[in-house]
Length: 396
Image 1 (cartoon, helix red, strand yellow):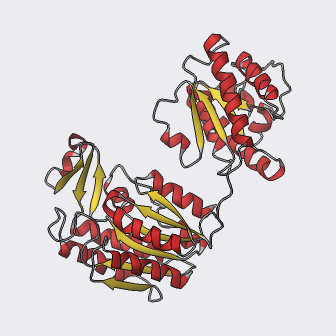
Image 2 (spheres, rainbow, N blue to C red):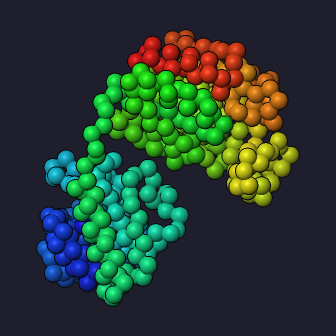
Image 3 (spheres, rainbow, N blue to C red):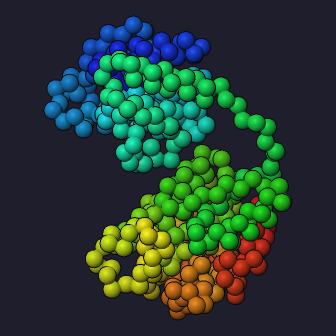
C-alpha cells in the first residue's frame, strides 16, 4: 500500500484496516515528504525513497515546484519497488490519491511486472491517464469524492477498493491448454481478415496468439511484453504505427516500435501493413498542413491520410534500419496488390507506384542476410496469410 501518508493519514488508516480485515499482509510505503502520523507501521519511509534520488528531503520540502516533487517521488518509489520485486513476495499493489498522489502511485506501479494486480483509487479516474498508465495492467477505481478525509461515500469506496485488490491477488486463472509457444500479432481494421486467417492457422498448429490493436498503445504493449519475455515470436502484419510516428498521427507507438524482437533475438515476420495511411481523429482535427492530401473518413472519428512517396521512402529506410539490428531470424513479406483493405485495386488509397517506393526502399537498405518474399496478392487474401504463417513456422 503506497501513498502520501502525511496528508491522507485518515484515508490510509482506513484502507490499511480494510486490507487487514480482508486477510492481507500489508507492506506500507510512504510517498509523502512531511511528518506522517499513522495507526499502522510505515515499512518503507520517505527517506528510503529519497535515498534512491539525487536530491535530499529538505530540497523537496523547500521547493516551490510541486511538479518536481511529484515527479521525483514517483521515480524514487519506482526504484524502491524494482528492488523489492526481486526480494519480496509482492502479490499486489494499491494506491490512493488526488492528482499528485495518483501520478506518484502510477509512476511507482510501472516497476511492477504484468500479472501482479495493481489498483489506484483516484479522483481523476475518468480523465485521460493513458500516458501515466502506459502499458501496465493498472486498474483505475473512481473515488467519486475527493480523498480528503473519511465520509459515508469515501469509506464505502475505500473498502471496496481494498476488497477488489484482495480478490485480484487471490484469483487464479482457470486451467488453460498448453501451447507450443506464444505469437504476438499486430492487427488493424484494414488488416483484420489477414490476421484472423493467420490466427486460425497458428491456433490449429498449437500456438497461442496474442493480438495487439495497432493504435499506439497496442504496439507499445506488444514491444513491452516481448522485452519481458512473454512472446516467443512475432507476426507483425500491421506496422502502421510507424507512419503515425513519422507524420504526427494519433496512433504512434513511439520511435522504438519494431525494435524489441530485434533486441531479444526472437523470430519475426514483418509486413508493411497499413503503411499507406496515417491516422487522425475527426476531419477537423487533421493538421492544416495536410489539407491538400488525400483524406478518407474511415469512421466519423477516424480520418485516414494517404502516405506519399517521400514518406514511404523514409518508412522503408526506418524498417530496414531497425530490422538490420536483429540477432534472430527475420523475414519480410510484401503484398504486391495492396497493403491494406483500402489500397487494393479499386480502393480509395490504391497507389501501386507509391507502394513500390516503400518496397524498394526496404529492399535497398536491408542487410543481405534478411530474406524478402514478394507475393502477387493482396494483404487480406487467404493465400497471403497462409504464406505468412508458413514463413514464421519455418524460422521458429
